[in-house]
Length: 342
Image (cartoon, rainbow, N blue to C red; front, side, top):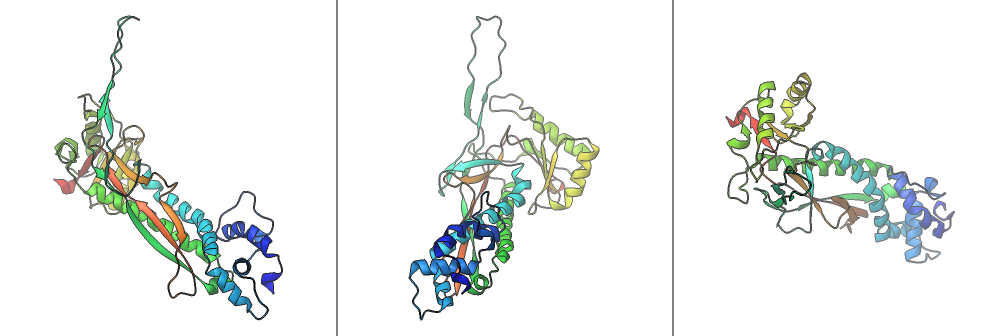
């Protein structure tokens, strides 16, 4: 039989690399048998490991036993992780360029305030002059943030394994990863569309950080100037350079054209879910974070894959879970704009 031409121990040793290769990953030092090993052989070896086969037992019965095991699902989860995470990272690249990242400890609502302060360098009259201390304190703004969990089940049928068609799962895992990034983008859009009451009791957006006008060169210049003139908690001008222009989808062409014609070093990002004619100007989040995505402290990535025991299904299943969230950190460092706000 095809499944018994290689010793089970050798199959199990090569299985992680074999599954990873089938799902599109490139192990740095793959097992010599990995390239030609089939999913059917792997399932058979696991089934034989779980219970020693007897002479009258059918080969496909042993394969099915391995397929339904947590060990086989674990191999699929680990192999699919690369595909799913890579697809998420690629699809999320646009919105992650204008957002900061905030680590939260769990799924309960918690405050994650930004910091602000009067840290101006003071002139020294001579080398013996006293150096003033800077006072760092919570910025005006900040709201409670909370992660939410989203999940999807990827099913793997017995036929897929027997026919060694695990390559088809690559597209499925990739699509799930991309969808998770789209979900995060939708959460960011919903955050931008909101106008929450901040910790000081005032709204996030007001006339002090809103331009009620359509997107063109002059109005973009006004928004950039407003960003420069915004004040810190100590009353000093922040002098923030506009680094990102985030627009509703139908404004993308106009935004790129305006930035190009103006010779501006501004990155343009279009975000589905924003109202028509809405646009925002933000600084570099590494310098002055305003809008943030949330990441769980104990996790290396917002996506995780794990075995899900299938109900009334001849095969196995992988649950892809995404822990996502977004929030405003502070009021300063963003200008909301749009003709719909007039």
